[in-house]
Each structure stands twice: as structure tokens, then as C-alpha cells.
Length: 224
Image (cartoon, rainbow, N blue to C red; front, side, top):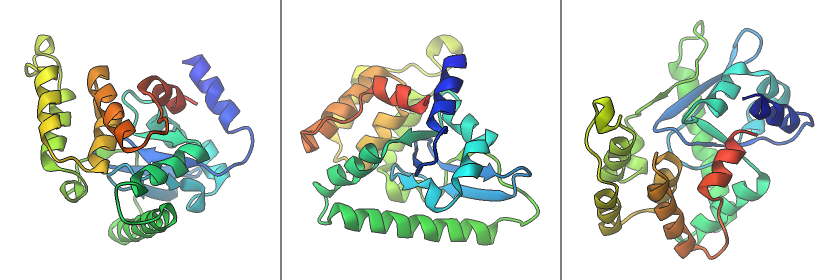
């Protein structure tokens, strides 16, 4: 853990734009400031954002709740480099009829509308805390069956009192579905088993011949 904290200290040693991606299965609410007086929520879905366009770098750097969202297992949020941020929209642009710039603009507009709605709905005297809950709008972002399959993957094992899981059967069913780009990103980010994550990575590479971060690279980047 000390090495992880060292990497985070190194990451925040110089002021920069901070790009993040929600890798939870729902909304992530974050709090910044000495008294947690600055709140910001990330909507469900894999679209990354530039967090420093909404929250000052200094507040992000000093937020314990933000770091907990990065360091928990599994994480709620992961850090992206600028290259990873732009590559996400470049890959997505290959499967939709929009340019990467249009997709970034659409994502920023959607994020701002969501943040404004959250601000209107939240009691002003209650600072937000880090959380991830299944929002009503998640089914609008992802294929519902994909959400169910990923939730099954993340259940306790049969030995721990959970349900019996057949990884090959789940992968086979995923192969039969007409998956959206967001579905593949969701499986890659949220799948607990490496076999499933690598399957999703392979599908994404079919969309784009550029290399995308591997599971090992994702885990490493989360801890920086």
C-alpha cells in the first residue's frame, strides 16, 4: 500500500488536468475541501471526464474521499492519462457517426447537465460522500442483460455462500448479444474475472487496431 500512496504523491506533485473514468456500477459522489463543502458526482457509464474542469486541482489533490474512490478494491474511479482520455473517444468514434471532438463535447454537456441536476436535488447542508449505487438511468446507458451478467460475476463465490458461476457460459452468452461500445467498456472495467476482462479487451481491439490498456495496465493506472 505504501508504494501505491507513493505513486499518488508523485502523480499529484505537479499541477495538471486530471482525467477520470467512473468504473463503478453506478453513480459516484465525491466530496472535496477541508469541510467537504464541494461536491461533485460522476454519472454511471464509462465516458471519462476532465475533473479539473469542474473542481480545482488543489481540492482534488487534498481530497481523502477521492483517493479512497481510487484505492478501494474494486475501485470506483480510475485515473486516465490525456492519451487514454482521447483514445477512448477516438475508439468510440469508429462505431458511431460522430467525430471524437463531437463525442467529447456531448459527454461534457451530458456531464454538466447531470451535475446541475444533482446539485439541485441535494440538500445544501449535507455534503456528498463517496458511494456507488445503481441509478435508474443505468439501463439507458447499457444493455440490461450485460448489467445482470456483470452483477452475477461480482457476487460472492459459491464457497462464500454466493451463486455458482460458469465463466465460459457467461462469455458465451455475451458473445450472442448485440453489444454496444459502452457495454464492452463496462464489462472490461467491472468484470471481476480476468478471463472476462480479456474477452472484452479482445472485442474492443476488433473495433480499433490501436492498443488499449490491458487489465494489468488498468490496475496499475488506478494505483497511480
